[in-house]
Image (cartoon, rainbow, N blue to C red; front, side):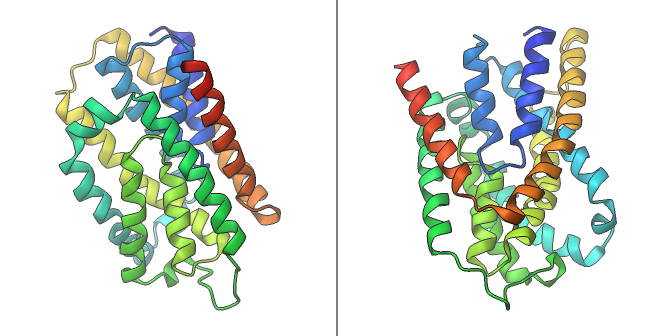
Length: 255
């Protein structure tokens, strides 16, 4: 991996981390376009640069983040992913991550689900409009939805948003909850990967990670603001169509 490739991947990460289109899936496909072999470092790079995107959320939502009641809800939702992710770490990194066929299938199915959900979803006045009003039970169930995103291409954001909508949460609140839930989820994923790799990165690899971190941070701030504006006047259907189109396009080109 060179600095140009690291910068491209950081931009892809920053744009896609909080959109319901799968950042991991896009990183896998971008790596394929860049002819990057799925080495252990590349896989670790794709996980660790997510910290830049997470920092963007912390900067934008620090006032909500310091609310202790909100964090009880966030950690209740984080628990299922923590257990499942830790248990299936080797399966995810050695088999699922980097598998373009699994990624494309997950992108396609996720797109169909997003479109179907929007066709049946009707936002009601009594739906939850504040994160602090989400019950711990519903938060845990939303977390179960998020845990499905250990499969590359599913999209952590999409799984969380879909789960929150099913639990009777308003669209904007569902999106913002997915932002906050990303913080412990991505911190845990990165921390686990660092521990498993014994922090053994060369100086050049650390430089590449720094480029990826900074790039994803800057781009993610812009992406979060863009996404919040879009969902106030649009549904998730365009994202579903995009996922399906992307999956079909890559399916035809990689065969």
